[in-house]
Structures are given as C-alpha cells and as structure tokens.
Image (tube, rainbow, N blue to C red; front, side):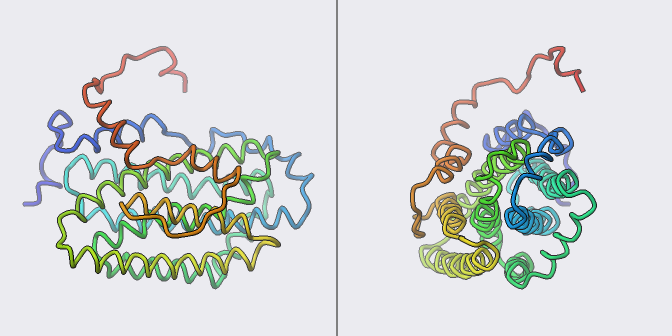
Length: 308
C-alpha cells in the first residue's frame, strides 16, 4: 500500500519545514487572472505601434505554450519523486497555479485584442523553435530521471520564459498587463526555489561520479535549449539583445537554484534588476524557512477574509 495515497495527511507531523513554508507562501500569494483589470490597458494598447503589438502578443503566446506544458506535463512529471505527503499538496497547488498562469495569457489577449487572441496562440503552435523547445522538454519528462525533470522544470520557469516577457516588461504603459506578469514571476520564483531545494536533497545523495554525470547532462541540455530560445527571440524581435540578456539571467538563476555556478553572460540592466527583486535565491529561502519554523500556522480571521 502506497502511504502517499492511502494515509491521511497530518500537517502537525511535518517531515520537512520547506513543505509547510512553501504551502503557506503559495496560499498567501494566491491570485486569479480575472481579478486584474487588464481591460484598463486598452487605450494604452491602442497607442502602441503595430510592430510593438505583434512582438508583445507573439512573445506572450510563446510563454503561454510553456505555461500549458508546465501545468499538463512538467509539474505532474516531478510528482513521482515526492519525499513527503505535504510535498504532494505543494505540487498540487503549483500545478493549479501553472494552469492559472496559462489562462492569464488568454485573459490578456481577450482584453487587448478581442476576438483575435486565438490567432496568436495558433501562430505559437506552429512555430518551429517553440515546438523544438517543447519536444526537448517532453523527452525528458517522459524518459528522464527525477533530477533531470526537476532541472528542466526550473529552466522552463526562468531561462525559457524571461526573454519572452521583455516586450511587456519594458512597455510601462500596460500597467495591468505588467501586474499580471509580475504575479506570474512571483509564482515562478517560489516554484523554482522550492523545486531547486528538493533537487539539492536528491543530488547530495548521489555518488560523486553520478553528480558529475548529471551536471554535464544539465549543462548540455541548458545550452541546447538556450540556443533554441535565442533563435526564437532573434527571429521574432527587431532587436533581441535585452530579451536574450533576460533569458541568460533566467538560465543562471536556474543553475544557481540547483546549486551550480552561473555560466551565462549577463549585462546589468534595469529589467534584470527588476527580476532580481522578484526572484528568490536558495540562501534567502532557507533563512525565511528557518525564521518561520517557530511561528504558528494558524491565522486570526478578519472581516477582509470574507470580502469576496
């Protein structure tokens, strides 16, 4: 009998405080796309040049594909390596939030280009570079080890996504669309920190030779996927320099979440600084968990809790 499925879960019997802390952070940061008034960006959207509109919608359509993949394949694929019952609950929540992320792009399209959002998603479905990324990710989700799956999960949240956000992040007039992406980025930061922590636990249990082999595999996969991402950005942006810079920052963040050194060149910029404020490093994560260990997980209710 598999206790993970047939034993009642006891949140007073915590095997790993990272599970409890992450659950609390996920539920505290819970949000829905329908609560953000993206329609208020319509006037600002109409004032953008056609080329800028196209770049934004194509990049977000590409990000949408990755979010769908993560919700349907990427996150479920790493659930089989769970170490505690509470981890199962955390991963269930991440799976749901990835579905919210995926839906958010449709909400943006519906608000800014009523009736035409589906055309952008179809364009993404038929894009060779995006399909190449998905195909490579799917091969690992199907045939890879638990640690390989975790590594590419984090890269998908960061290196393969950050560059696609550039067109929106640098368009400050789209205030509510920016807020939507900021919410997605906060979620990705928490997902990456949590999965990176779980990766490290398993990685430390490997022999030195197995660690070396796995790190070589990860570096190779990252290089291949980041080259495909660079090709995608260069093919669909007039100037992809900053987008590639953000993607490289994301890839470095993924490597550091796994406990490895950053290897991709990143130039300082205001957008990189913005992303750094949203991301979580493992040392910070550990400190936050340690600080929360002695706190009660019972919160007093207020009138605002009933304001739906």
